[in-house]
Image 1: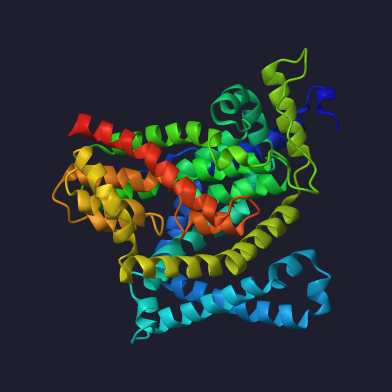
Image 2: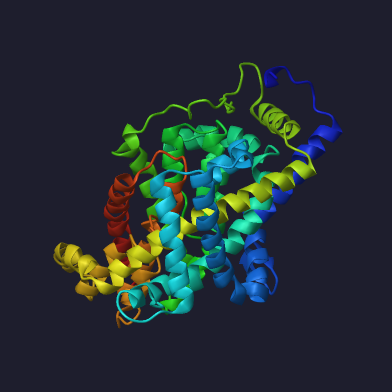
Length: 456
């Protein structure tokens, strides 16, 4: 259908575009005082309610899910039953390569060891509360609830035209600044305010759907998928920062925007292919045809996209498949990579050794506790919460402020965002993630330190 020839939309067409899109924006983008006045997005509030009621059961439930994933994957990959082979969805989910099969089996063993709290080296290294225990007891419940509600409600944000409408309106700003389509602004806001992992899932779906090129999807996933606003509130409180939260998150936003402008123009993002995923239909059209008004064309794009949206049973089926896919294929990766990375951080001097050259740099920048700050700087590659733990005991608030803000702007964490990116179709590999983590640190650290010295 050529949207440039659309007639004035009917009231029914407009309502199909406006109502689901408005609900999607409220759930994922617009922070409101839900519950007792806490400012968060709707999906975050639903996730918190669910965690409050069932959170104690989620660690065991997710481990059992990882174990079931390993069992079903082993049977399907070895036996290849007809009903799995004949289903494109089940085939992709359970008939996998040898490396993926081994990863799921090892993840299942990790989960059993963690739940059983086995002792004795090396099992205790896996079940340690600061390694596998952190992944299962702290990370799994958060990811499980966020992905459950996001899986079912994301179509309201993606399928009913809001991204097409707003993307067309602000393309003139997003493309020159960040080299990405305008629709990625909603993707970015959903990540910044809601959840970084959910932002990666949105980006992956948009790439698979023909809305982003490989280069655009890579830029969006490693430049905009920040840890959520509610978690920033938690970190600020954990580090006992007496500065206002607005200042803390303002520094994070300023430094992250600077990184988002610079990173797409340097290696490795600058070298990524600008082609769409092979075999998909290109579905994006933000260019305003000659003779059309910008807002009129934006509405046309939104209404047209909404007209293609599935009905309620289709939305429920799609949501169910998304949740199952995340639980059975993503959670094993998170458990394995997260636990392995935390074991390296907790039981080896690896991060301390490689951070030694940074001590003179922190001395030069006049950051107190330079040794602690240096170690905390690189350990963030394993998990974003580790830097805060490293500097929690520092008597210098400026050091806690700098490392706390930096842990957000680094963005790449193997326990969460990194694992999800590696599992997705987004063309970013492990080496890319490592290079981008270093680049983000180099770009954002001086900005954070400079602002911190103005405040303290």
